[in-house]
Image (cartoon, rainbow, N blue to C red; front, side, top):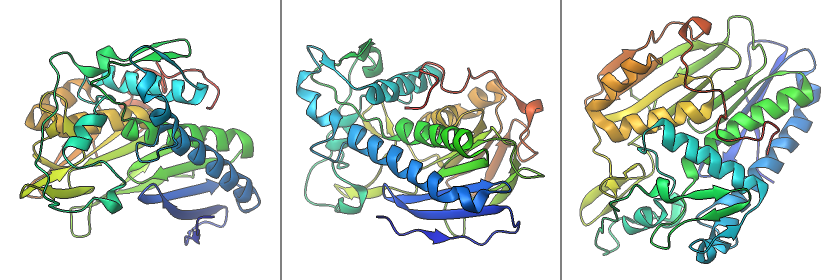
Length: 336
């Protein structure tokens, strides 16, 4: 059982818990008259879903579903409903980002050294950096028909980013439905909310690392925020600094133009897809995000902050952008 710590709150009807999860920190906040009484059931729901996602999608577990079916994928493998949901979510993220967020980079990540839990990745272990890139975008070769999934043998699934984001979305929605409490779920930099939220909105602080520029925004219930960073999950190979966000065109870590990118959207899945794609695009992310009109905060390599889409004003319905409905392309409507 994970160790959970209480978090000081300023309102008597708000209760929070946090615990280590997936090499990061998970945080669950409930707001409502019965929040304290509802928290144990909410934590149990969080345990069940996060354990199921880990057993389904982890690249680092030999017994996970994605690893058990890997050898069968070129001919087609039958997959579970949960893996099908996670794959559809990843496909939606790829479509939204024009392929900048590609769920088929498992082999490319292993080739640059990210082949185990980040806590176990050693710096400069003597291996050469090998770029793995394909002419045809890998995500377009990922075919899901019903419960049957196909992927060419030279590619491997990596659902990490989108799976964590959609898990935050699902948990927030599930717990809100089950408890009636307004709910905030944070899985590392992925934050999802459900319900009306506290008066004045959820107060969300955006800061990548201690000492980095920070800001706090008021997030209305039902909105989500995601931060992608080139400062975390890093290691060295061949004397070069590596990070976990790859450019699908090269198979190598994206140039670290941005220290971090934070995006607000109507689902955590979509916020994460846009923030990750912005890291991949570098300076080209600015006109792209501006055209979308989404609230965005970018911190460059020198610590300078650029804001777009009305950030840091309150994220509310006036800032709504048609990114697609939350979880679109990642049905069914019921939680995984």
